[in-house]
Image 1 (tube, rainbow, N blue to C red):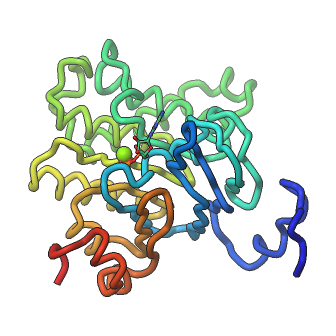
Image 2 (spheres, rainbow, N blue to C red):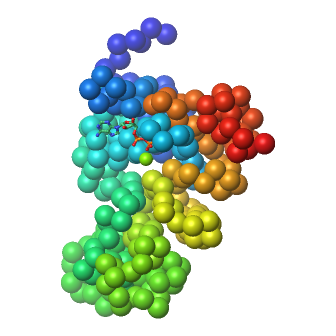
Length: 271
Ligand code: ADP
Ligand code: MG
């Protein structure tokens, strides 16, 4: 087919019909000056998938997340969310459509308590469920739902004992758990986590990934994680980025067996 000059947004339908991808990128490119941090990336993440993105430092993982979440504008190429092109949409609009991202602690309000942080996020989740009039006349039901959600999430992230503490006063690991709680409370269709376990020891890393996996069981998760053993154990699909390009993609077994991956990245880590 010679549809080489297809306009952006104009008939990407053939590809979209082929896949039920909740997230798709097409020839995505991001340059900083003459350097291509993301250099023609095509990925398609299916609904419900647990996708991990791995690759050495500087491979472009965070930049890819920035393009998907809208934190950075793409230089070229396209991003589709739930079948619709979102390449040029602002971050807030992507969030409104159901995309969630953990911004490494910056989505926590230090001056609010743990409970207030989670409640604020849960409130946003319930916003669409009641009309303005209903929320005026049935405020109690509404608040009961939100309170129940809030308590449930605080329990699941293991912060019930410190629920009334200010977020700023929490130790690092608890802050990260709260951050996960805030993402969970907002009930996104797609959640992007960029190294949620950065700075954690092995046990805490295990616990955190367990928590993410448990509470996000019904959602689509794209995870950047440096603990390769965990990634191998948990992911449905792994995308290996290398120098801004997809070096390999497949099941954990396929990726572990890939010669290019072994040479470029995994080295002796995976036998
Ligand atoms: P990763 O998350 O895989 O470690 P990054 O996406 O953070 O990699 O970075 C990919 C490459 O792009 C790196 O070489 C990094 O130095 C470069 N880079 C990232 N952000 C910028 C920026 N704002 N300006 C210039 N170079 C950048
Ligand atoms: Mg990074």
